Image 1: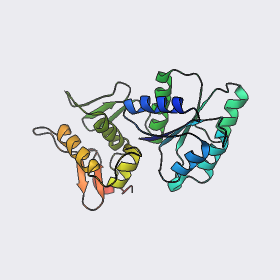
Image 2: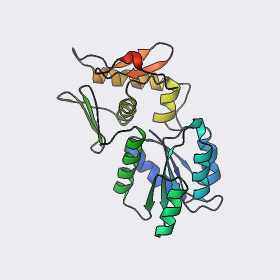
Image 3: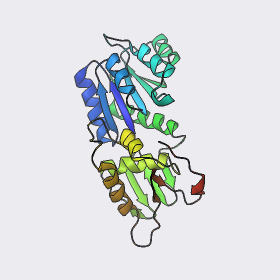
Length: 237
């Protein structure tokens, strides 16, 4: 999942970004509202962690613009991060389109829990555990397994599997995966997506285990739920 952290306090934005990267998310930062909108116009972020008070543009205006003219036609989830803690401020943030509101200072564990909750909502999932066939991913424990076998995954492989499982049976192009699983520092001219999909595929399927990640020639990749008909899948970029 691709996240944008927006805060004019550079050290705070960088600290939040580092922590979210350790959780396996692809994270970019912006240090003002104008920069945030410029980046959001280029990248279809899944979630924006947005400071409310910034000198160049108020977070409420940023949130409102993301809702009125969303990049790619679909608005990202917005988590407001602010020192304003009055009921009126919270209501104002939610009324301007925020999905959740977290008051500074906050515990990083609460931030990650809210991020997981919002991203599960994005994927129409109700729990912290994703299940496709005999693959099970526990987001809160950062653990994945197939059947009785634990999967030894790198942070990027875990993030890629999580994205596949949140979009099961959808055909995802390399460009789409690069936008949502990698951050702005990824080189689009390398084979990083193909290589990571390949290593994940090998770790998922050992011995006689059926392969669930399919290559759709000319379109991308698809994680197939064995309980559904893959012919019903739709391309997703």
